[in-house]
Length: 475
Image 1 (spheres, rainbow, N blue to C red):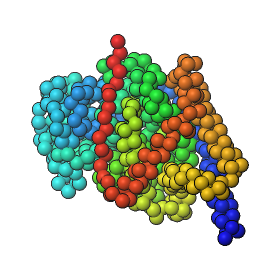
Image 2 (image 1 turned 90 degrees about the horizontal axis):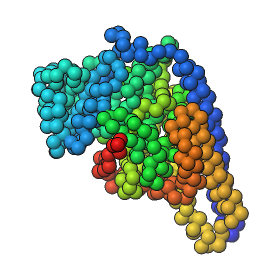
Image 3 (image 1 turned 135 degrees about the horizontal axis):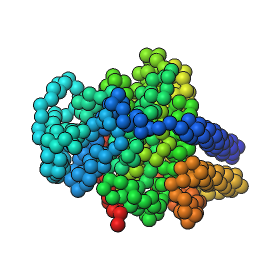
Image 4 (image 1 turned 90 degrees about the vertical axis):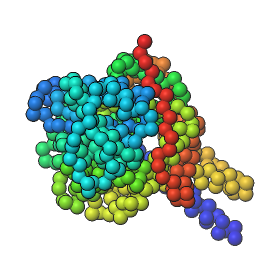
């Protein structure tokens, strides 16, 4: 009996050790590829005048689709910000997804809207459209308002995608702040490839909490005052500047943030648009579009822009954060299960052999292993069979690697984009990196486990309440 127990313990130790080593190796490669990709991007974009794209009447058309649900407090200012982008040929399409407040009334009054007639495909899947509005004022000619019955974010995006007539569509959150030259970078990304068709473009999402914003313009970049927001800023920096840059380098990016994603409308429509049966629609549509292009055997790619073009507000309360991460976990599980035939499937190249397994083992399995591993350690300690030397060595190794990787993300961001140049801000982020594995990461792990359990046993659907405080106004 004792011999069998020793064998079991050695097996568990080996599994956790190998799992950690594999993750360390993958993160090292991630750091290398992201660095190489960032340098390549900076060199490639160190010349050229984007303003010529803006002024050209031949610039391709883009429709920005922004779903809105009960956004009456900020909708007018948010739309005004979208109408001020530096681009000549674009449309702002706000989809009022059955708001129960005065969102539509405020838009009608602020932009002098009138209802128009427009042909709608009855076979396209989305909730019924109640009305389409355009402004009587020439300065607001780029604005289109779609009023429809409530169907959720994915359904609203699908309605906008179907009604758009431009070659490209951008799907954003209505309360996100886009930089004035954002569309110029997006258009350039769609056309900078000669041998591959660019089917989607994504970018970095920056944290706007505590930043000063006036009239839809970012006046001053500030480090968030809220500590929970600080931890998320660090997390976003690590994820967007290193993680997604690395996946973009090897052309294996499997997710584009729903807050800032642009698509080739033809391909997006061909795969049926967004899946309304998942809360991870931003990840799921990339899976579908990539599969579609692979099966057609056409050369394609998904581009990623590391420039700071989109700023958003992150949760500042633990309850809202847990709801958000619960939703992310459910969306991740839904997408992985739906496309499970890609797992180690050489038919899909690097996507099936590298990207999907990474998402399966790290994004889905790792939080579960951490959570249940914690209780396993307590059980082993109680039974007196915990190998203290191995436990302390492995824990120290994981902690130090995590802190060093975060340090590298912070310093690389300072070197490349220098959003937070004050020494105090950099030291604060480094302090966050040292305490994050103890304070913030366990909260994220618990939220991920809760998301998986609610999806598996309660079949929970929907987004849940997402409370925002609003951007800080410039003095």
